[in-house]
Length: 124
Image (tube, rainbow, N blue to C red):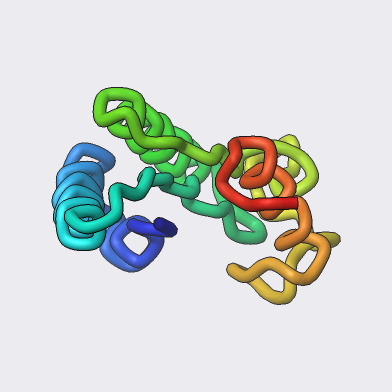
């Protein structure tokens, strides 16, 4: 699941509110799709955007930490996105892996796919 980005960006949702929405959506999906064939759940951290100010970086960090804690409590996998090459040291999206202000380019998706493979979510 890539969940909460709109709540985070447009609504500036507090991490606790976003986590409760995420918990509901993921749990309902796991129950619905997993009844006949149990499936593991994974949540991808919310991606940074380019040119984020310090307050927005801090909110994103708190939100992703809350999503990671949710995943740990539910035995879901969390794929963190707040690391190189996607994130710059200032917390913003690295333009080298970005197609625009918010979205990854091929290099960005390759990095993300590599993390997902390392977490056992994608086959080689």
